[in-house]
Image (cartoon, rainbow, N blue to C red; front, side):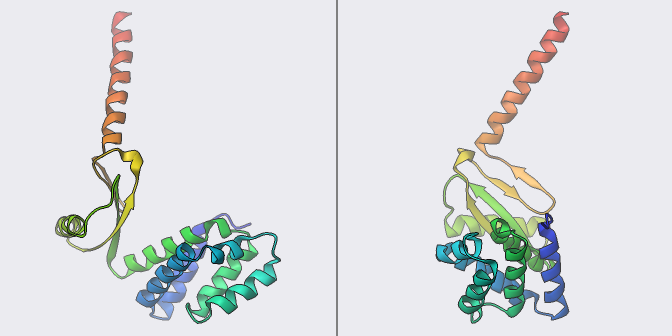
Amino acid sequence: MIDNKSAYVDYLVGVATAKKRLKEYADFASKFISILDSIPLVYKVISDLGIKKQRRKLIVANVLQKNIPVDFIYLIWTIIDFNETDNIRRIFFDFRTACEEKLGISVIKIFTPFPLTKQQLSNITNSLEKAFKQKIKPLSIIDKTLIGGIKIEGKDFILDESVKFKIEQIKANKYQMEEFDEVEDE
């Protein structure tokens, strides 16, 4: 079993780069992720271990051949062969992100406990583009565990201004102070 999901991503990025189709392939990856999200039956068939691998591969080819490039079909077949179907969404998400990065677009994940308005997302994106001096593709993710505030993740950074993080900091500081007080008392 192949344990390294990045091997799939690296392979497909290499193919997309060689064919000079990074943007197109990134768009196809988005389309495939949307298919997985909007048609649960597709994922169910791909990952159903009760269906023989060869049968699943034929179904994938018949259903998806008009929607995505043959390279993607072959990759899905490989994922089926190595029983990595639990990771298929992540593999295609990471592939899309890698293509966009090669195109000079930074994908930034923006976590909030509530949906952002288009204006809020636009304001955040504009601020990040000014700060980083590059094109930003925002990915808005709802994470109710944050309680309030915002958490922003890029490839090389995390900015966490969430209420959850602030509470964790307070707890950590309190614990450190209690340890310090115990040492002082000795």
